[in-house]
Length: 503
Image (cartoon, rainbow, N blue to C red; front, side, top):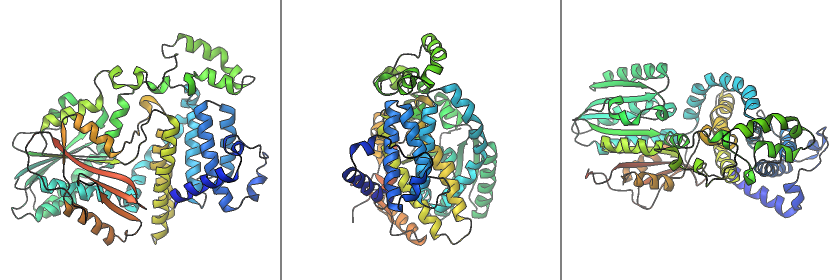
C-alpha cells in the first residue's frame, strides 16, 4: 500500500535520478504539458520526491524554491483525484503552503480565518463517517470497556469520567451497559460524567444514554461538563467532575491527552523561526531579495525590532521547555487525576511521533502515518456497497485528517495542537507522574480480534500487544496506528487482571 509505495518510489528516485532532481526544483514548463507525459508510476515517484523536496525547502526558509515545488505538486495532485497518493499530496501541499504563509501572521490570518470557520460545521459529520468506516475507535471503545469491566468487579457504585471530547461516542457506553448486564453480581449503580465543548452534543448523549439505561434497567445518572479538556481548571478537577466518595472511579480519555502538550508551548507559534534561527524577514529576504523580501523589509524590520519575540529560538530554548512556562498542563492534569484515586484510567492515543522539535522529522513521520490512514479509507470506501462511500471518504480526508495534518505541518508553538507521541513516550510521562501500568487481559485482545472478524475487517487489520500485555496496538498492514494502555495511581494496591499472554 502507501508505505510500500513510498519506500519503492523514494528508492527508485534516489537510484535513478541525480541529486539535483531530488533536491532542486526542475524547471518544468509553466503550462503543465509535462504532466501529460508522465505515466502513473512516474507521477507517484515525482509526487513523493516533490513533497520531500518541498518540506526541505520550507525547513531551509527557501521561499521561492518551496513555492516552485508547490506549483509542481498541484499540477499532479488534487483533492478530487482518483488516486490516494494524489489526494494525500494535495492535503500535504495545503499544509506546506500554510507553513509558508504563517511566516507572515497578519496575511495568514486574513486569508485563512474565513475558510477555517466555514469548515467547522462539517467536523461532526466527518467524525461520524470516520467512526463508521474505520474500526480503530470501535476497537478502542471495546478495549476500554473490557478494562473498566474487569477493574470494577464487585463494585456496586461506579462513576465513569469520559474525557474524550470530540472522540466521545454514546455507542461506547451503550456497549458497556450490555457488558454490565452480564455480570454475575448484577448491574451497578452507574454514573457517567462527560466533558465536551458542545452543549448540544452533551444533551444528545444524555438523552440517548438515559433511554438505553432505562431499557436495560440500569440505575443511571448522567452529568455534563461543557468545556474543552485543555481549558479546565485541574486544581478544581474533583469539584468540576463531581467525584464523590463511595464510588469506584474510572477515567476514559481517547485522542485528547496530546493536546495538553500544546498548552506548555503556548505562544511559540509567533516565535518560530526557520533553519539557523532566521527571522521571517531574513527568510524572505534570502529567498527573494529583489521582490517579496524587499517589499516587506521596512514594515517587518520595524515590528521585529520592537517585538520581544524577535530573537531566533532553537528547540533547546526555554520556549520549547515546560520549565519556562510555569506548571506544565499535562503534569497538572495527571497529578489531579492521580489525586482522584481512580481504579483505572484508560488512554487511547495515535501511535506516532508528531511532536518532535525538528520540522522535517515531523513531516516525514506524518507523511508515512497519514498515508496509511488514507489507504485504510480508500479500502473501506471501495468495500462499502453504497453510493455515498466516496463522499464520506472525501469528508474524512479533508476535514478530520486534513486538519490534523495542517496542525502538525503548518503550525508551531501553542497553535500546533496535534502532538501525537508513541506509547513508550506516554509510558514515561505517566510513570513520571506517579502512575503505574495495569495489564490488559488476554480476553480483551481476543474480543478485539473477534470484532474485526465479525465486521469483515480481518486480513489487513490486526490487533497486537506488547510483551507484557500492557498496551494494545491497532495496526494496518502490520503498522501500528493507535495504541490503548491502562493506568492507576502507583501503590494503590488495587487488584487487576493479568496481562495478555503471547500465543
